[in-house]
Image (cartoon, rainbow, N blue to C red):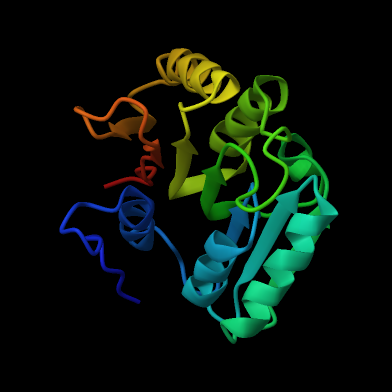
Length: 200
């Protein structure tokens, strides 16, 4: 599955770039989580990437979002491998018992929806911590896209950065991708869990 990481203006498209990074970690037939389903575009990507033998769980607190995500999955001809869940992403571990190969967080508000309803630090940080430390399999990866153009988004990004600093570099690699000369543009962090060495 290939994605064009250059947009129509010849610039890098960060939201596509994160998918390119994740493709290196996705296991066909594995389990993936879209922690912020929104309109379902990331859910669709994950569904097609893990294949019909895989499993995708997608979370959102807005029923409107899940209805839109379902339409996206149908439109894209995705395999019947997605479970849509109306609940907060910080409760994901209650629904997902298996280890995940990849997960995606696309923070902020629902495009085309109520902009006053956004992801919040009080649930985002516990969700990312649980995803990275408890849910993510050896050799797996998460992406966390942040939108600093509104006060909560800026605060989310700052709090997440402090959390990333606490992760043991012998087990995790956290890489931030952002456009240096456009500070209000979205940026994302790639969290990779190193493969365990099972002996020589």
